[in-house]
Length: 161
Image (tube, rainbow, N blue to C red):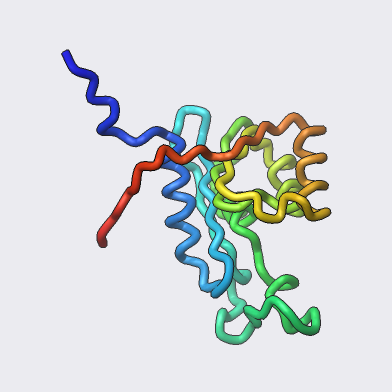
């Protein structure tokens, strides 16, 4: 009997693809980040992407990365990880896994820790040498939250809709 396992994507491939797909909902012209929270038995619990809070128009608030503080996106945007945590309506996230396309910042790390998520699988860590991300790792390590970089299989997944 032949093993047809190669015909199936792994759980990590599946959930990272879901996180990246969620990120495609973001209207941020520079950084589209998505997150997917998964139970210990591989059920999707929640998803999120970076954007403005409910009721804050994408057309009225700024997407700029530079300029006066109140004219940039940074003070208004809710990150994908926090959106996924806030979108969850099922109770506790204790022991859950978080798949996210960009390593969480220090503010999201606080929410991840407080929510009970125990594992983070991330795709990119492009800001890893900056203070907010160094602080994030320090807090995650202290709180016993495991994290590891997603290792792509090299498989290309194409979805037509």
